[in-house]
Picture 1 (cartoon, helix red, strand yellow):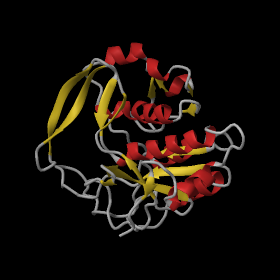
Picture 2 (cartoon, one colour):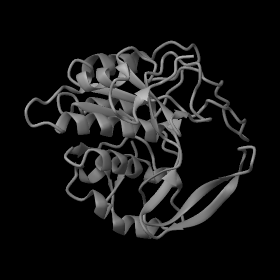
Picture 3 (tube, one colour):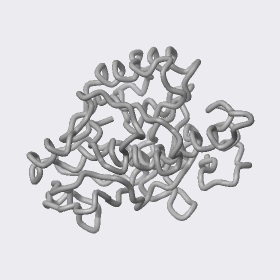
Length: 268
């Protein structure tokens, strides 16, 4: 993900190398010039920690602070840092290929990780596509990677228990849905440049917005993915008698028998 902001609410809940941290001192220097994407990992971490307070997070960053983008090779290398270290890997990002074929780099990383790690990935926010100036238009509901690669649990976003408008529809490659619309979590504390959209969803500009409380509201399948990872971690640590594996918990959720707001995603 992006770098993790040293948010006081996350203190003691994560193991993060210094190079993967966005310190409060650095954030204050950047206040007024930093973009909203820089708080992505912090928002994700807060959602997981809220659901699973006994879980320990490990964060490595590959995505930049400006747009939360990166070369695929950087993301794959960051993925491999988790090999044999984590039981669940949250991947709240997408990758596209022109020919729709799985990336060999991603497929190889997933093959290496999947025997010991449950891989959970965001399905993307292209359930409804609004063309943006100077941007690539992603076809509605198109499968994206790594979510659609076999061996990965793909996650869509729910709003009031149903797929949110922005979440892909008619997507048999999506396994689970979770709250992902207007969710609240930990965020950067200071002045951030936030994208502004008109009523049709077209980007109209950027506005300086001050987050005084270190909390924000955000929507996206990224955050539904975090809620799924947090729910699985919480259920793994709930019992001291027998701790189920991450895959066992995910299977239970995908069967729709669990009392949870994480449920199977509609396939049609």
